[in-house]
Length: 176
Image (cartoon, rainbow, N blue to C red):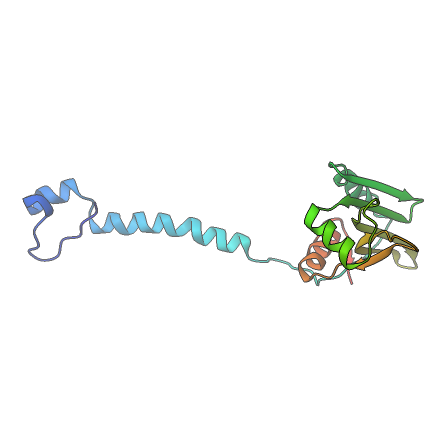
């Protein structure tokens, strides 16, 4: 228990004022203890605040071919239910199966085929430009149909766009 004595206040338990100060922390020590609780919270807020946030974009310009970006993309697409596909040096694609509820939703709402399950797809496309290389990201749900071509349902998200922009910036690109 922490107690601050003012004037002629009595200490709990009938202790004298002098005895109470030796048993309970002083007000100044209490303030220091509160400060120690405040510093980690402040540090967390400052650390979590955006420092240099790029504009949300699914495209970026690179000075040279972003091999490190594509190697990292391939490595990150190695989990259970994920598959990586590369077409030349231009198209890199990561597909993964969805949770049951999302799968059922897509099959029912987009006339999907239950024998060929929908997947979440992220496709990075590299294009040579006069300034280097442009990389574009597309994120969509691939929903195979009972008959006809598969439907690609685009995924729109500001948070996702921000994460892609940060990835581009980390890998040396300039989001545009």
